[in-house]
Length: 135
Image (cartoon, rainbow, N blue to C red; front, top):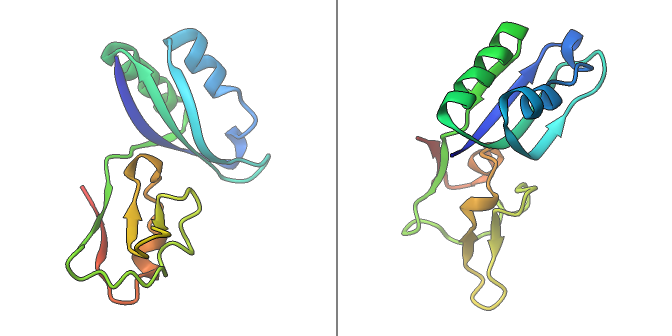
């Protein structure tokens, strides 16, 4: 089984179709929805973790692509230059999933990568530019 993070981008005309149901029933995907922004008649975005076999993952990705849904594999990570970090906390204020937080005892920055959705807000919030998004 593979545990993969994917972001799906839905065009406005496809936001009402039950794609996740199809992926579970037809392609044996075990799905954990991490974040979603989907409204009828508007572009939608869905960030999810998928656990399935390599073969079923490939088949499901082909189904999504053929349906007109753009899929991006979320392999990027947040990198923080710990030697340069001044622990100002600016990045924690924009980190909605709580992947960046201040240690309440030491007041140093703590990074919890398992919570990170690689949205990039922390990178732009860092006043000294020591947070980078990369592979």
